[in-house]
Image (tube, rainbow, N blue to C red; front, top):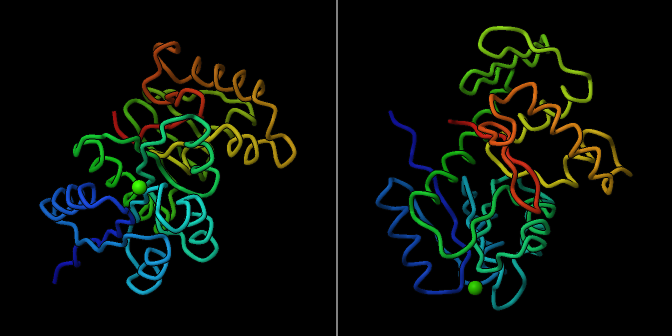
Length: 231
Ligand code: CA
């Protein structure tokens, strides 16, 4: 018996965009359901229980940000925002509202499918509970709190370790400066972006072969950081 193909809910008012998404997703083995408005999207999310949601921000009845906030009151379903709004603050708002990732229109099918795979894999990992993370030459044992690079132990300060562990929890996804500061330093420190820059630089010096061209800990300019899940 095989698992049914993952169901993806598309919340998007543009007919052409929906057609493009439906064709790309179905030909890659996903089941698809569609909604044209925010209200219909919320209804379908509750009724069909999709594995993932692709969400446009500019919807006729309500902003996609509101949809994200409403969904996050009861669902952990990964949300990938697809929007023509490419400004940094739009991305930050969507991610802070609880979206998992953000694609600016126009985007390619390859990029879309890669982001979907990462988001679905993160759900699977979350359900299993991750105790090991590995990426290229980097291995992290989250139970024993051991970080290995090319098989040799790397000594991290407690804050550096917490920063890395937080990025691992969100691996593959963008995490905003504000989210990282809140999770590592606690609420009330969300404006202290200089801490973050200092510690991220230290972490890169310890983990990256070339810290100015990081392979693992990448920068999302003006938005935050992303720990990659594959090289
Ligand atoms: Ca739209």
